[in-house]
Length: 351
Ligand SMILES: [Zn+2]
Image (cartoon, rainbow, N blue to C red; front, side, top):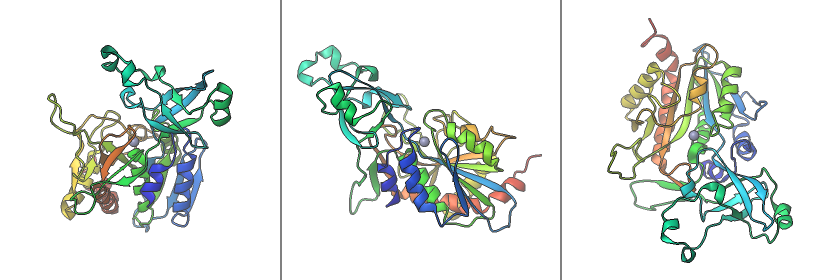
């Protein structure tokens, strides 16, 4: 299954090549042309039916948050820096895979027997942590791992809950945003009224960098960003409203911290979901950010929206999502795009 392969692929920001080659092999044959640009974005084109003269960009980022090796200590232990937003609290005692050789390692942690109460109640900062690959010296470590190699959490994709469960939950790493990449590959099997630019972007997690280049080069008339968004359902006495809910359907973004969605596109996606009875929800406004943050303010301004599959525990070693939400999101984007040209021209046209 493509989502499983993409979830297990390594693609920390700046090192997206493994993800890109999987995507490339999947979309060849479905697209009219494709190219890899100067920063590593994969951009494919698919002609439309000719009914609309618009050019629409669909974007999903290939990169994931992870770690970068900065130094091997004399002891053979490895120092590292975070790449993208990772909470220091999720790091200690995790297993990781490093570099192109996928060298296994463990993020070292003092055993409980040796820590006092004060230490146990405090978060250890990532710059005080090391990755242990079992090497006995710096020289031995450097035979296996180079400075600048990136590390991902060693998480396998698997189904949870099993037969008879109402939810089709799966667990894996990097659902943010291999889910979007999988959706985009699926959507490339469709024919839309407009010419489609499909961009698999790089370096979203370190500042929406690849998307900036894509938006400039493609200069589309509208953009839809396909994402995996956090479902904050962990109970808290301060705030009981989740950002999104797993099992609640496709999450439509009205506003996040990076942009405000074009209201005509919000209306298009919401009314399409209503009309066809597709499960959907509105993401709690003003949380997170996506590639739409740079795309919408590129060139002369590009009407943009983000549609996302919700997942719990994103940016951690293992996230959990419901495949029914994936199916709802795919159905919603596929259907809504058919009416996108009308939504942008007549309905709610700017006056
Ligand atoms: Zn993302």
